[in-house]
Length: 213
Image (cartoon, rainbow, N blue to C red; front, side):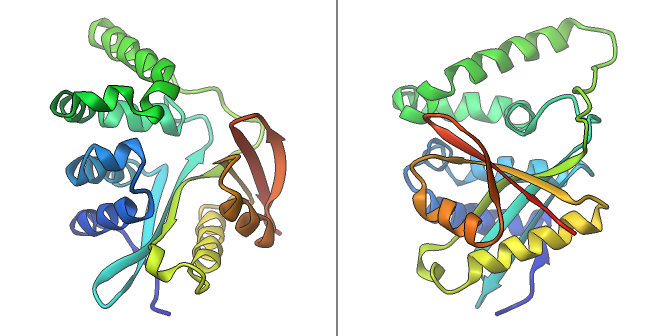
């Protein structure tokens, strides 16, 4: 297995193409590779996020992105990504108006509306943008992870999670959190196999945690 690499701007297209193969039916994939590149560029825009990948014969076969949550950023990962890709998402949706009826969009309509309002407020607000509420214990959130379908079942997922732990320790933190769809049974089993514990569950998602020694 090849070594992991820290993502650079030149790598975003290949990571986006891999993501589209991993999640072909997702709203973000349907919005196109250029939009996915914009999403992944967020991880390069702040010191509070990181993105890494592993490749095989020049193709990205696995990747993961994390966010350091310590109260210094103005938004959580979902809102941060939405603000970073705001104009690109509007353009992608207007070009593909049928995506307004995509299940992912309908389920995130409240988030979309909230970020539109945030954008409007920030345009007219002169005061400094406030930081998010500082958590009792800073942690690293696993925001995105994927393994190309052709390479699944070969240990790449566990290797990526191990590398994610190493990145967490590098940032001086020992707590990791993630949220996964409740119907993604394969991912949930993988997380549990790699030491993640269930914190909370709703009808749609499961929150999981892992603490490092």
